[in-house]
Image (cartoon, rainbow, N blue to C red; front, side, top):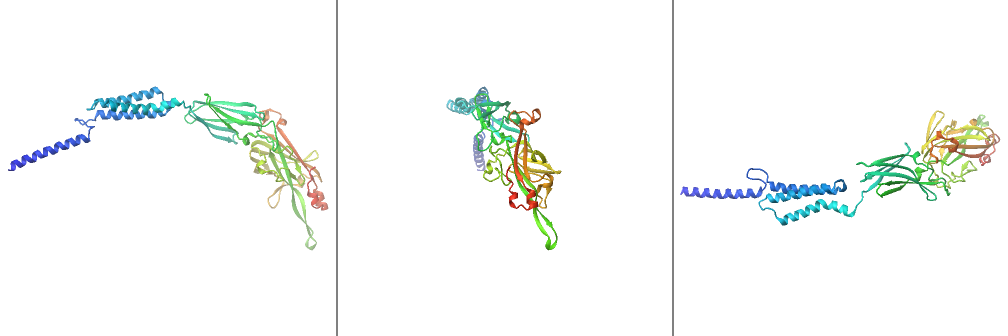
Length: 425
């Protein structure tokens, strides 16, 4: 009895072991009898990997030739075919046809579409900057072109277009950076005056061309291409101080004029700008919008002198302007400001409130007509030649404003407010 039971148990274990073996075979089809990889499966998987790589190359367009893409396609389809041929079920024409169609669509499709629609290589002008420190215009050209040619053209008020600068650069992976010195293309101001029409003004355009008929154009900012100061103005106001005389109940305090506070403005103004009664200037009355002051972002020097008749009575230290930043040395003290509005000048004395003014002892020579003369020397101008190479008179702007000053009449004779009107003369 026990022998029969042992035989029955042995038979049952044999059946269970055979079932487990079949299950393992189904779960691990990629393992052969010797424990090695399933070659057909590896070939089919590798074929699809190759086809996907071909698709990625195709998306790169012209950077990978069609021959390279086709070679990758053939390798991928070949691997798929080999995998099916070595498998137990053999080559299935339907499956192979579907796989080949998908491979062709995935690999050659993007490349073919790009050729069919004829999409050109594109480029863009980026990072256009105006560098006032180095007096340069700079920009980058980015895109899928090999070389870019940049030109700067001037357009006159009559519409005549003239090329004034040109240069070419090859584009790398990060594009190409162009840097152009102002003096290499400047041919005159884009703005020459306010509320006027002037045939000498010049507009500037930047054009970038890929050599294949595609170009991009940008109008340059007139604020940067208006480099020359063409007008300058002065405004004045008296500086008052109190003087004590006598002591106690017999003492008195008298207010006197002891000098002038002077402001200057340089840039682009109406042609008829002028000094006004009261020491004002036509650009300081508030009638002109602050946005139309015509400030020039350029490089120039400013010299201010005070004359009586033809005799120079005092000269202000030379003011250097770089862009908008103005600086000068007054009595050993370095002064800074911005020529974006009226710029306060230095002087010869400082009052108890820290106000710097031109003391009457340093320029005043009795009542009369005094002229405030401004000389501007521009660094960039129409002839495109540096200062030292030409007669400076050709680039010198002189502007004069005159007022009647009556300090003596006011101080000595107590002339009253009428002596402080500073009539233009």
